Image (cartoon, rainbow, N blue to C red; front, side):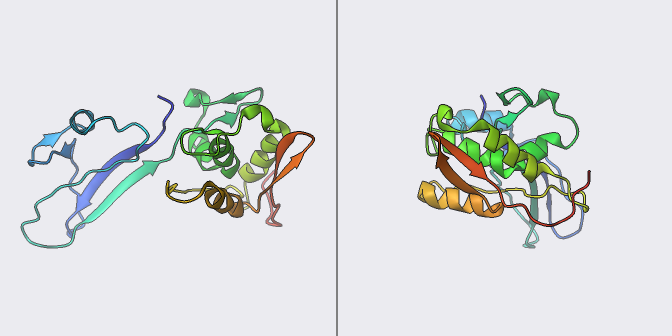
Length: 193
């Protein structure tokens, strides 16, 4: 599927500084099972960021859990079209695409399941590409100018979610010439050329 939520299980630290790694997750009765088996038991995990942890802690210390959670695969501009083919991305490009606010905003605007459901033909591609490029600019610190890491609360109104996404990059939407255009704030931080 094109849904891109991933959880990489890293370990449980019982306070001794030595995380215990596990090759699977625990089932409800304590046996270790694969994530695929857990999905089979509870139904599909499609469209869900998911982590299940069950443990018995004999010495009653509070464990620390760590996980790397990746966001949804969003379409990005590959120079000629919108694509979700991440195979051609190198190094950190995959993470930069998923964290680019413009790509996330575009995904939210066009997604019919959890977003606004606007047809792509109403979006002004050139304004979205230009705004995405501004967000991706490398600052002198080496970081992208703007990034977005957001969990969407399905109970929030779409306008509130969109407002939150736009605020990350000083963005605003404009209806002009029959198209929805995106404009991004341009901070004064120096950019690496």
